Image (cartoon, rainbow, N blue to C red; front, side, top):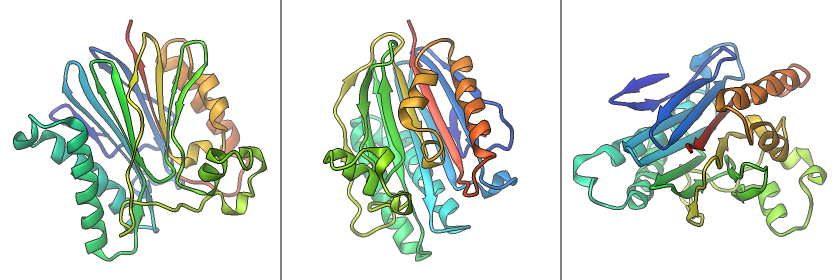
Length: 265
């Protein structure tokens, strides 16, 4: 993890520890584990940008296209977001506008690099306890209440996501051979950005963001059940324990990253 000017970027780890970050509006937990035993090979990137005591932007990007292209693409997404949000000229514009500008810029930079790589982007802005999800690709954003009620779930831009949105098939019935296909990535000329609804975060509501290296192994509803309540460090460790229990029994491994944020009392 690299911290510059209170900005957290490029989170990568080969330990089973979670990092806890404290903000005036709540606590965040970040965990990232590479598919290999080399942290530098992690194609997932994370950015957390506190803009003020009541404004935070969380971002997660999962690179696609292989090494080094995938890792480079995810880092471009996070770098452009951080640069746009922290640029003095942009401080007076809406945070949402900065996020959209950054994703468009990242898209152009990745395309111009001509590596054939791309990356997902899931971004959540929090302003005065109001949350706005913005995403490209199949990385997940979800919000759950203290009692475990699902408040919001993003639609993955994948066969799984579109099938579930259309209520054609349940997640457990989807053919796993197509579960890793992604229809929409940063770094694609046809990229489109999905903007979710504005949500008011109530006390102890929990935001969950993750790459598909988590939800490929642990269904989202089980992830949310593990993290919905209790101290955020304990909740995060519950999910990490489950992850390591499951991952040792699978042949296919992917980089696995999550961000959890819980609003303070």
